[in-house]
Amino acid sequence: MPTCSVCGAQLENDIRFMNHMMEKHNFRNPTGGTPDRNSRGY
Image (cartoon, rainbow, N blue to C red; front, side):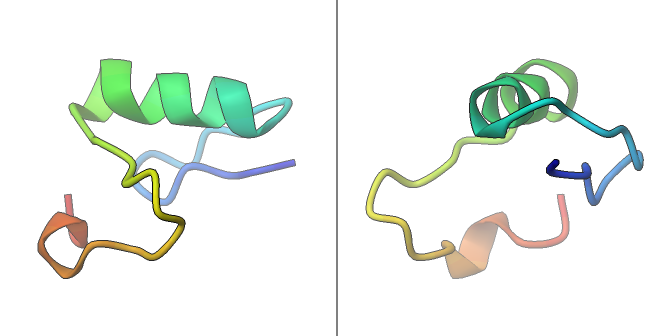
């Protein structure tokens, strides 16, 4: 169960987690699977 590192919300699965990050925190997840250095801290 992924936990949001920004607000601490617990999400059911990765899909909900990614949607949460994009909607609530305007976060774009890179599709390559490697974390983008510029995206950290948001």
